[in-house]
Image 1 (cartoon, one colour):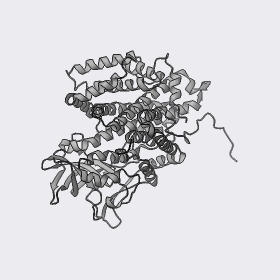
Image 2: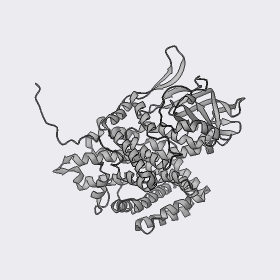
Image 3: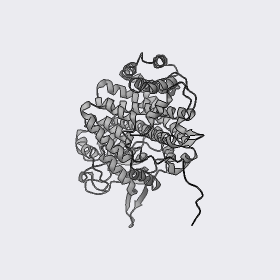
Image 4: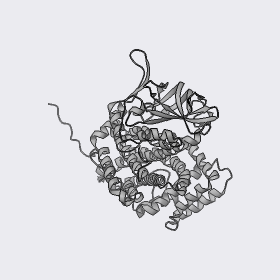
Length: 544
């Protein structure tokens, strides 16, 4: 018998077997705040059920397996026929199926649908962020398809279905369908007007033949794709079905799957079109305008995805420090560690609160709220996604060397953390989009100022930040060169306003002192020591 050299002690238990939704106080309170009272009981029940599923050991293992067994491209079958299929581990299909059945592709016609879906998206993607991509694309395709009532009538019931059907067959024969998107090309990247893919009209009205490529095509196993191509009258949006109505495969040649830093469970691809059949969506020459609503919806999901990742990173860090002892006491009770955890918790709560506020604006749908979204979505996408990686790094460090080991799950969060800042337009694209909204849509700034103005007088640091922001907005000289600074301030003021109105005083005080009042260092854990940091940390502890 082998000798026992030591007994394992002072290790935290796994963070499993809990309700991920109910344990997130900021998220649960946002749902209560933004939903009509008549919807709350049903929404809480649904979200808690999803929260228990997300917190289960089995489902968390699915996330691990889906990443350890990434998708594989099968270009040909055993006989040499071109098939262009992507093979996934069974855990991927289980995850995606759960996400679809939870309604994460169904929001547009459901009362309070966007808030309920946003909360579910934050909960579910904490298990595994990769399946958030096809869920997001499918959800976001609906407003673009609605520019063509006939296409919407055909496709929307499939996209909003809670049935996951992975079979490779015509969409008309399926109870549910998924969508992907292809915009960027090798030579243009974010400058989609430089696209060279050609669309040649066919005899049947509204149908075309595409020739060209897409450098990034999301979710290539989907049933349909929205893509941009150059028609006779300019850049146009098209629907490309994966399988044609007669059961034959459309020409959709997957050249390779991207070998990505993170997001390993999800397939991203390069595809070639060569006589590919497509249906026009919207008018010729208005492709960007047609697809922009899809882009806006996926940008919001980038905010929500980053909020989800930050929440999971902070939950793991606080959980670890709750149990781990060092230097004579629990880590969570050590003043310096408490400062770090509180600082991380502030960033996480501010992201969640902002993301759910944007979802509520979609549910409202009024002219003022839509104008607010035009400015707030790119500003939030810019700032929240950029805060994600520093949070993941610092949260990992809270676990010490254990956090650097794959088994902890923290390296997977870290690899995932830069993604949402890159997808759907990187930082400069978002900053320039904010400038366009300020210059071309004065109603957007008015709506934003009305929103943040609701908290005026409640905190002198917020009042000062609003005043300074107005001064910056009044100075147009060199505005493009300082766009990032301006957009950062827009996002921080909006987060501060929301926290002052809705968060506990301890959270709002700490956020305004550090992010708006300047009493903060250059790293996490540099909050003013006089704040009530213990209350902030306790609020972030994942117990339900």
